[in-house]
Image (cartoon, rainbow, N blue to C red; front, side, top):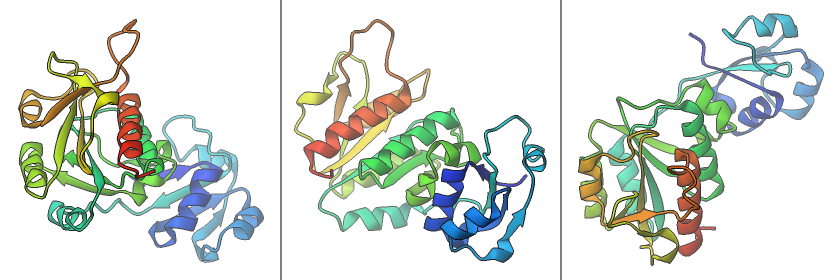
Length: 241
């Protein structure tokens, strides 16, 4: 199965940022694409909108631009740890079994805007970086340092050893108002599964549980919204933005 992204802006921005990750481009706007990017023209195939529509199992708004890109390269956890260990302040996002690729992509997009460059996920029971995630993230998934691990608890312990404080987004009795916390310069934020939230083991490893105030007219924020709000609050507090 080809790793495809689509849409004029997504395809053009991906070409500009990651030209070596592009395998092939199909377009019905050849001249415009050549003018706006410096991609090797041998990688560009002139096509029709009808032919490009047949490249997908469902109807998509490709706008006359489709690209096949190389598989995402995950960063080994030890390399991520070495990279953040040299920084005085940083936010690491830990996702506990996010299943919806649209949520995952939206989280990545917000992280990029809020200067959050590090993300840790499970290598199972978790949606991986796929074309839907890339599209939803506006191509920014390839700007992130993402590690897959088989045990998030062990990853949290390693992060604590290099000076990180762990904040878990929870609605339990111990949770504090996320707006009123003096966040550590080295912060880990845990976001839970869309239905079950954060698992009990990870909750026990958190230094602080936090909640986002709301009208409570419905149960809770969507996972990507909660992640975005928390990243904004913390990035602003520790002057990352």
